[in-house]
Image (cartoon, rainbow, N blue to C red; front, side):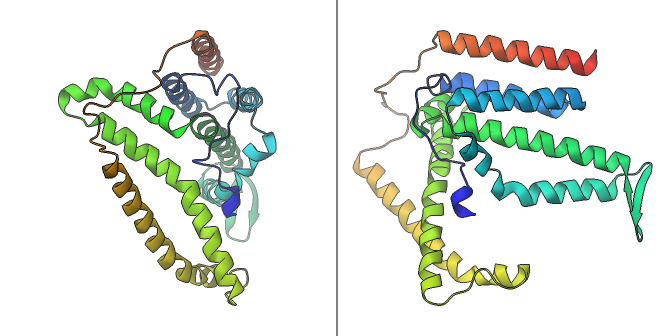
Length: 266
């Protein structure tokens, strides 16, 4: 399960998404999220899912790897679908004892699964798998730079978000090592019910938190040793520039979003 988490990991490549400006990718992902939330018809959601698959193909990321990232959220998808099925009121499709399953509940659950799956794949694919952490931090800082006029620490916020994303694969690797070490000493993480499995992970959390605080302290010392003072006097070796690829992606997203909204409302 731990190895299936792909958030925060970067896959090197030369695809159109890899070469796109991070600012454009962030804006387009936000537009994608808004459109995905607005859509409520199966036609629009199916087109959204096909567009997501096309994005995976254009990114050059193996489809199996992209789909593998869905395993950690399967519980969330199933839980949300069950809640929708059990709570929705309407025409009863069938009953199991006192539980009544409605067509409206099944319909809402199916749409929810499609929407959440597409959203998760698009966000993880565009913002992490095809974007370097440093370039993503620069993009976030550039987009938030107008807020500096009202005292918002744009650089610090962007740096914290980038470090948090970058620490995800590091902590996952550390968790995997701790689990293997505990298993070699006789710890059992696979048998028992959900409560017993949760209790078995308590011995993993303590060394994991210790390791996380140690790594954070080492990172702070390394940044201070390099005279890091936030955005004050900081320069960049690589400047962000808009290219023809960014224009193509922007036009494609505008056409796609406009077409979907037209289908949804017209």
